[in-house]
Amino acid sequence: MNRKTVSKVFYEYGLITFAILLMDVGIYVFKFPNHFSFGGVSGLAVILNSLLGIPASQINLVINLVLLVVGFVMLGKGFGIKTTYATILSSVVLSVMEWKFPLNAPLTHEPILELLYAIAFPAVAAAILFYVNASGGGTDIIAMILKKYSTVDIGMALLLTDTAIVALSFLVFDVPTGLFSVCGLIAKSIFVDQTLDQMKLSKYFTIICDDPAPICTFIKDVLHRSATIYHAEGIYTHEGKTIILCALDPRQAVLLQRYIRKTEPSAFIMITKSSETIGKGFQLSI
Figure 1 (cartoon, rainbow, N blue to C red):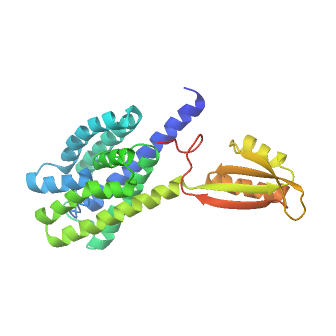
Figure 2: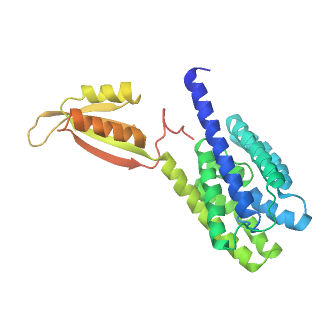
Figure 3: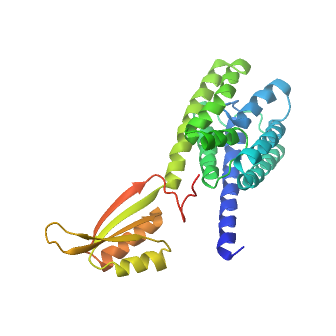
């Protein structure tokens, strides 16, 4: 592997590690003690723990291993390796938390406050994992299979796969816990979609200028992106103009805007937010 590939691997697995730590804090500290069961294998583990008395972390591991096999078959080797790492790491972290920091009751006496954290931490973590074509295992794998082989987005796929688990919380626990779980499931689905959209966000530039050479050189040599140019004519002066089309991530967009303002102040720039850009240098086609 070349240096660029190695850097990408370290970056992706660094994101996966951070996401799993964030997810497990939300699950162990806020979800398990309150019996919140808004979907996922961790939600099912809460229910089975109450029924069988088996530690939730062990239930979580066994179910995830079964679904991992399905993930390997349906989603490919790349997804399987990343998700295997995420699943094993998550189970280890949960086991260490149960051993080192046993919790027999909720952290606070504010269930709504704890529900917010139980939603936000795992949802942000799930979005990060989906962004690098991985997941925390469990029903996320089923959701990604639905996304791959149907037209539903990832939030709706999560909602569909987790509804049955939420319904069980009404039977195993009380009505307030079930209602909290329903709210958590809906909020989680929305939260994942919104967070994932922000992570995929890019800026699309349409630049109309007289001298395209410096701008194109900056895009190619400094930002390490490509662009498309074509020639046009102004309807008032009938003078020749060059139009540059370029897609950049938000940080690069700021740099290009500053550069154009400094070197070509007469350029006309239109910047459009793109919720998803697919192609080389951005998200791979799926």
